[in-house]
Image (cartoon, rainbow, N blue to C red; front, top):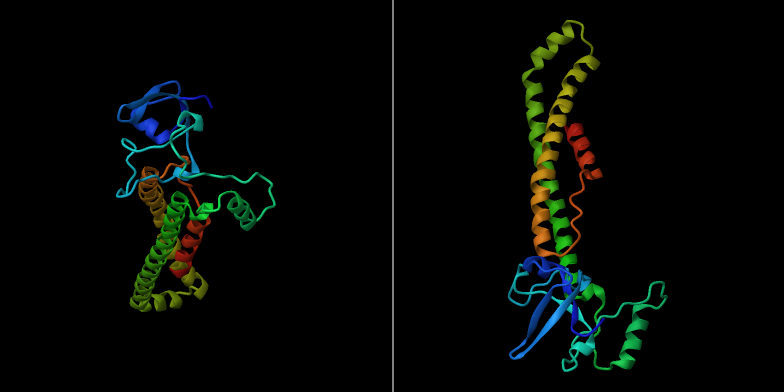
Length: 238
């Protein structure tokens, strides 16, 4: 990389309408330097980037950039990011030992302990736990209400059931008639529930996540096996 050129944070560049080839001026006090934007980048170390005191990243004020060390010779390093070569068989402890030989007083952190990575991993774990808890709670509540409703309906129609039997209808035919309620309840609710979950709840949560984190906007997965499993369970309970 040439002197006075940099690779700029994609979210910061988007917030300020900057692109490759543009120039920005940055520095402290009278030491203002003009920098050429050579590339727009994303970095795993800055998936979540909010300085102390902020909960939601403010890309109008804060961002990051990479430049050549020769561009800022007077600025000391306070963080070095090392990537192990692909296919390396060295264990993490061995890599840490080699770094310790060169930099005795360094504080060594793995990717799993890096602030940005840890923030995203903890958030994903929390979302999964909340999603599972709410899903189970709603399903058990719905199953209980459905069970009570159908049971009372059958209890109130005992005379009607006896009439059907006296008219010659078999138990199989009568059971099939009432089991049809399971299909009639499940199919419309399955479609309605999927549309609400997919286009309202999931999209809303995804947009919030995109505000917090710098990740590829791949969108929400339309279907998952859990959807069909839950629909099958509702039909079975009914």
